[in-house]
Image (tube, rainbow, N blue to C red; front, side, top):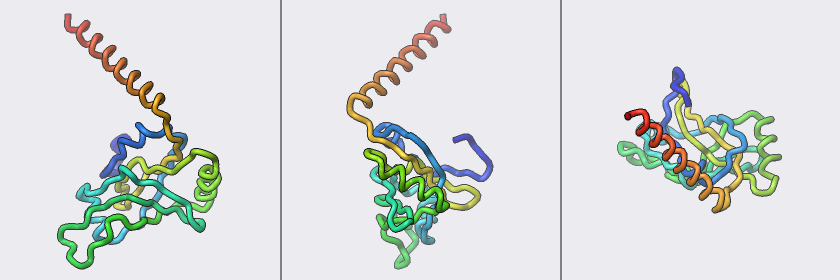
Amino acid sequence: MAKEKGIKQVIDNRKARHDYHIKETMEAGLVLVGTEVKSLRLGKGNLKDAYATVKNGEVWLNNFHISPYEKGNRFNHDPLRPKKLLLHKREINRLIGLTKEKGYTLVPLKVYFKNGWAKVELAVAVGKKMYDKREDMAARDAKRAIERAMKERSRT
């Protein structure tokens, strides 16, 4: 994401692009309590095993771990509590239709603050097979080798 005014990226889910083919992305608001916001601003979150589900016309983010705020005492939150995502009704209906299809899942790609509001970039994704992952790694290695060779060639 380009450095736009008012956007501060906090957490990135690097594993998601390795494990899934990303079909579509959308931005959703994130409902948080006070100590979660403070902890997120310090970068104390983990999207590694997080996923989203649609229940009763609402979208929920599960397994998104936000570490307890150090100075939060008794007002601290449960680190793994489900967090509600804010989307328009038509976006939720679209997600319901997409997730009904076989193999599609909702995966959070990144969490960031935009104009002071916590946002999640949510992706509709399909899991990669092992051979797809190997193919991607081979392509990435080949690209690095080509860049290295071009760099060496330009030095001489």
